Each structure stands twice: as structure tokens, then as C-alpha cells.
Length: 137
Image (cartoon, rainbow, N blue to C red; front, side, top):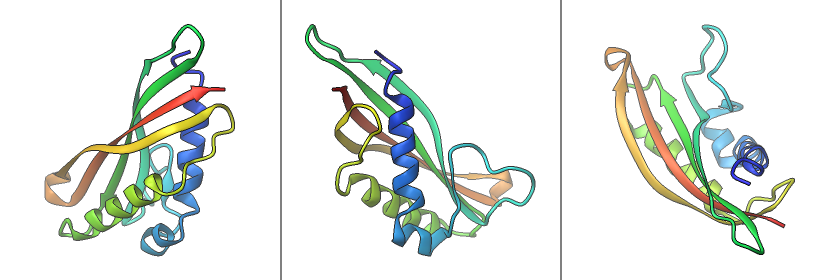
């Protein structure tokens, strides 16, 4: 079971973030499920990152817990922009339940975040972890 619903969850997260009106106002279409291509990297973007999946199936139900990393990265000189975008991402994911193409999202919630400077202080990055519990119904 462990990875059976991973793709459906990632697709639903991507769809929610890429179509969220407030997030679009902040960063435009800069939501990625892989690092932005080439050297034309947006000033601020959101990327769906690493995922850790654990099986939580029972005798009569298949389920898994997904710890999904969502990254906000910016060239803005302070963390204010990255934090505003990160807060909007959290609001978007914790709003009405995501609809999965396969399975059912039981819950999703913020677990942790780490803010840091990259590239000698030229970029700011916030890596958030969200925990999702999904069942295969």
C-alpha cells in the first residue's frame, strides 16, 4: 500500500496550490513539482519536494501517512515574503479537503518548518512538512 496513493496526493496538492487565487497573486504561476528548469528561475516560487510515506493499513483497510515537504524559495532580501507565501500555502492545504483521483484524504496538517539562507545569503528558503493521512477506498 505504501506508495499507492502518493501520486494522487501529489497531484491534488499541486492542483490546489497552482489554482489558489491568493497564492497566484503572490507568486503567479510559480508552483512546481520539480526544481524550476534552466536559469530563468522565478524570484519567488513554491515547490513540492521530498515525501516520506509509512504504511498504516489494517486488516480491513489500506491507508498510509505521507510527510510531504513543500518548499518556498525567494531572492527577496528578508524572510517576510517567504513567510507570507508559506502561510498562504498552509492555509490553502488546510482549507476544504483535497479531492484525490484515487483514495480519500482523511486529514492534512502542518507539522514543521525550517527557514534558512542559501547561496551565501542571496536566497531565502522555507521548507515546510505537512502530514497527510490517506485511505484507499
